[in-house]
Picture 1: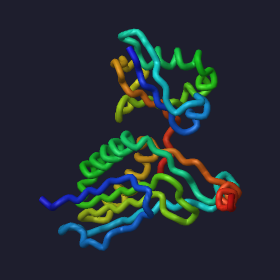
Picture 2: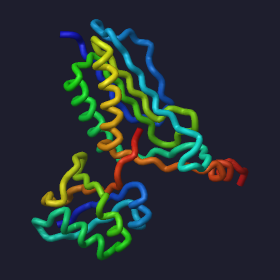
Picture 3: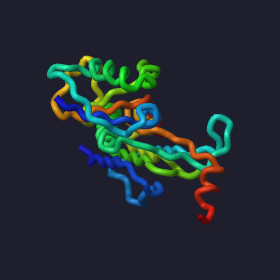
Length: 139
Length: 81
């Protein structure tokens, strides 16, 4: 049985992928980056403040990841979600899925993003450009 | 028994607090808790159809029987990703 790597976390640091070699028997890797768009409902924004129920979000994220590993027989799953302020253009979500074959990797990547959007207690608060500019002014 | 209630996202503004402590009789359910909260903070009632309930780190249904000192979270639909 191949070694399975699962790394799930909430973090307030910028997201990045490690350069580690994937587990043996990995034949396909799909990376998904969720990125903060420049507008929200037609209004230009500076970024999004991500609020989380931390204890519950970590628990539910782990549960979703465990289900994903089992359902799609993955040998690698990385799910990192930002909390706090994420500026426009930065990533709020990183998912890396590794499996023996590409079909499972593609399906698993889409599945876990859909699931975490309905089951992990995280909320978005768009931050207006004006609000950020005011905060930067000297007092 | 005392129950600790936490509010998240815009429910915090509607409840005008991030958390509070509520006294309920033994055997009370989440539904009983919501009924009491809606009388104290009527603005929350408008969100009744979409409020998610957490007990500790698990989602629970409205017939969940509350335990003394349980930590209950009231949350709007999640928006991660």
